[in-house]
Length: 108
Image (cartoon, rainbow, N blue to C red; front, side, top):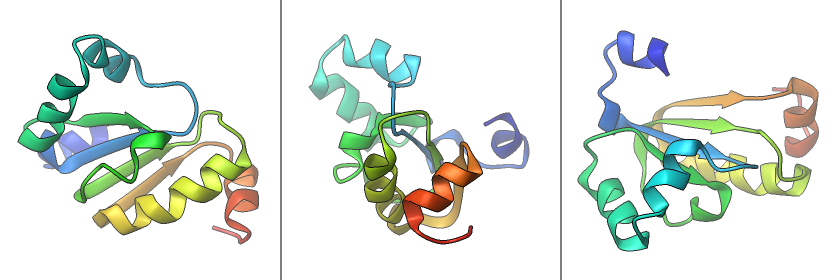
């Protein structure tokens, strides 16, 4: 994240998706309710963190980062193509390369 921000990306340009456990920021913000959480998404003022289940609700951003941090291969296989559609400039996938390749069915 720091590298993206240091390279000139604005925080509002970045969407982070997790396939397993929610990012602590998302967990914290969701504690204030869904409406407040999604209002932050819509404002596009900061990095937005969401779980895999929210990938269909999240709107496109220039940069999408996917943390393959759990959730089975079927979750990664479902989220990665959708994340690629949401990334208008750059898709970053973090996790075990063998697991990511297996989920996609191809060498990445």
